[in-house]
Length: 188
Image (cartoon, rainbow, N blue to C red; front, side, top):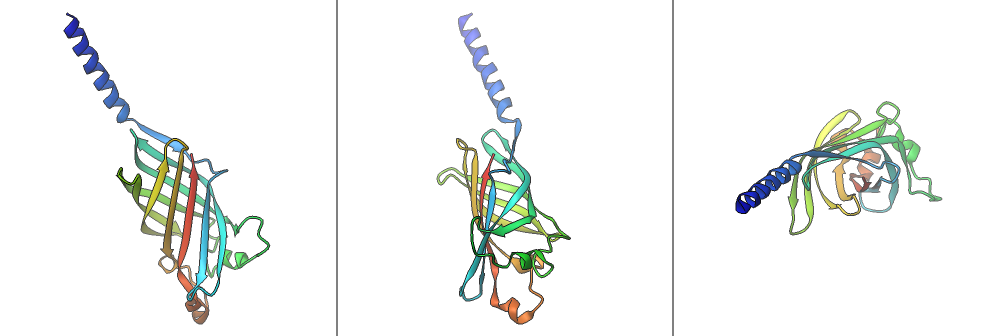
């Protein structure tokens, strides 16, 4: 009888554990703490401009301890220079139609489409759809997740021309690097 009871307990705990691992959990983004750092430079790295842009909202979805999805809305109206910087940079120009056209497209969106976890490096390979100026393109980047601190950090570059982010002057557009660099610091 005791063996039967122990067997039933083990089976019950196995079923409960597998059910818990199959439940999707949504982790809301702390948009007050989260930030997306950006850096743009000239083609020959003569100089660069740095700044930040903030999130309106977002969420990360997990099942067990694996990321299964997520989506983030970026407040393009919040694009700015590095906080507390005396350098004003081209912020107003970045906001106009030559670049991000933020008054027509006040948000950008990132939707995770596929995530693969590499436990030996604690790294996640993430494929996502990034929408800027109403244009959606796929991107791939790597992210480090800290489940204890509830953070996600990623560093990636995009080719701005894929989203129609171009200067209306061909000579000046060629002087600007097509690569825009981002460092994301997300808190959940």
